[in-house]
Length: 242
Ligand SMILES: C[S@@+](CC[C@H](N)C(=O)[O-])C[C@H]1O[C@@H](n2cnc3c(N)ncnc32)[C@H](O)[C@@H]1O
Image 1: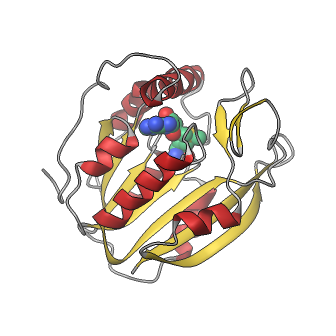
Image 2: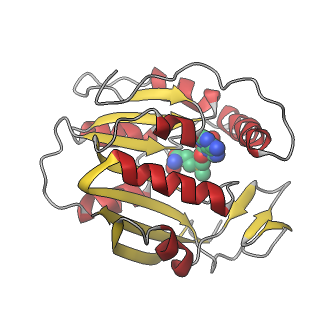
């Protein structure tokens, strides 16, 4: 156990596939494993734009040893960035291929992040209350999750954060050009296959409502990302634990 996080490494538990929660996690796992196998730096080699922005935004608190939990870390580009800032990093993702790439990196100057394969909610449930300074995710909460799952995540994020800690996340916005494309599977949620995965787009109102209990919203900001090749609109959200 490090920093209040019980290790829950190893493969995801065998569960039936199908339309339920575990079936959707399995589909995400397959989708992202395929992409990470095709190109180990498919989302970029350096830290994400959101990580760089949030790092500039963060007040100058001493990071050393503080616990940062990353949800949906992919191949670890942001987890390693946060570790280089001095955080103790615990990161989770369902995609084993990305995690192997993440673990194979080395940096002698940095205490390496700990990478766990799993689903977000059980991982959060294994963390001690009020032990975390930052819960961070980049373009993850907009994946194939329903509103009740978002509400469960936010409840757990609130529990694990210390008062004054931050929940910082970026998500695809409901003003994104891909909004409304593909097959609608739930409110604001579209199956973009074969060109993408299932995407739950966030409006600022939805982000505010998810953070309305136990948090003080500090930032909701929409930005353009992806350049001309793949223009997308992204919400940057920072909620502070009351
Ligand atoms: C758009 S990628 C972002 C990866 C990383 N945050 C980055 O910016 O490089 C979304 C990630 O979320 C992970 N993911 C999606 N659904 C998940 C779930 N239910 N449990 C755990 N990870 C999940 C995927 O495997 C994928 O690595």
